[in-house]
Amino acid sequence: MNAAMSRFCTLFVGMLTVCGAAAAYLPPALPFQLESPAAELGKIRSLAESQHEIVMIHIRKKDFAAALQEAGKIFEMKWPQDQEPLLIREIRYLSEQLVNNEQLASALQLLDANVKHFRGSGSRAAIWKEKGYVLKKMGQDEKALEAFREAQRLEKGP
Amino acid sequence: MKCAAFTAEFTAYLDQELGASRRAELEDHLSRCDECAGDLELLRGAARLVESNVPEIEPPAALWNRIQGRILPMPAPDARGPAWWDLIWSRRWLAAAASLVLLAAAGVGVRGFLARQASEDDLRRYMSEYVTTREAERRQHLEIASGAAGTPRAAETAGGTGYNPFAVRDTSSFDNPFRSEEQ
Image 1 (tube, rainbow over the protein chains, first blue to last red):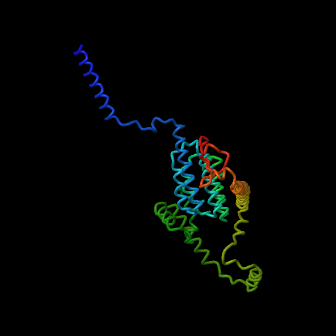
Image 2: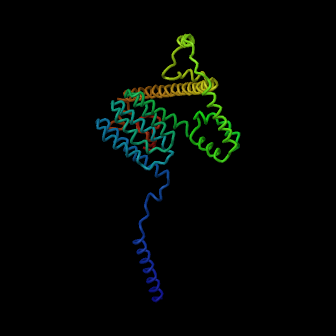
């Protein structure tokens, strides 16, 4: 009985050692690998929500350069392409805030710097239209027309 | 080449009107063809005979006056050469073809211009519609923002938060699209 007990204990300890070693050497599972796309999107969206508030604080403080820099971080996030309408709302809203603060050049800068993050032609057309709107407000009618021409071209497709 | 072809050029040869190469060809032929050489000698002799036997005639003075009388009323030839319209007129079929081409090109140009004009009008309308809509939207947002001051929502959002497009909670609002409903 004692011999059997002793063998069992030896086996049990051995198994524990093997499991411990395996746990120590295997890399820990990355939490985002286990997350669903919806959870991942929720996380990005939550970060964007906070980032949006940071941008708005900078705009209220009239620190427009910082606002542009922080706004860029929103569009640089790994958004799925189907979220582009949401990002369009954001960029139009931020552009509007800059226009309200008479920061037309900053609004233009915001649009120019972030258009590259949009892949859909509809989204790009929306940004070109917003750019045209800002240019029109700046009194640059010819450039505004050019921007709308580009938007029209994108909307019509190749 | 046959002798006849050379014979036809004897007069020009005697008057020294042939080109150098043609003259050389003819002389080469004459050196080989006695018949042609004989004919040429006959022609040369005849010419000499005419020159030596015909007396020089002095034209009457009135002849020159008559010729001069006809020349003077004629317009002086243009030193610059014929005018371009004279050239075109002399080639009427070419002028007609050129006119047709010009007309077709003008038609294409006018059509292109009209199409461009229509497209430009369309673009201006497109721009105007967007600018009007956007301005109305902006005014509406400003009104909502100013009207919201003092409301429970404004109090809730005091401290920096407003519209957030990322918020799911109130996607109909215009201030933060990222805000989630769960919050």
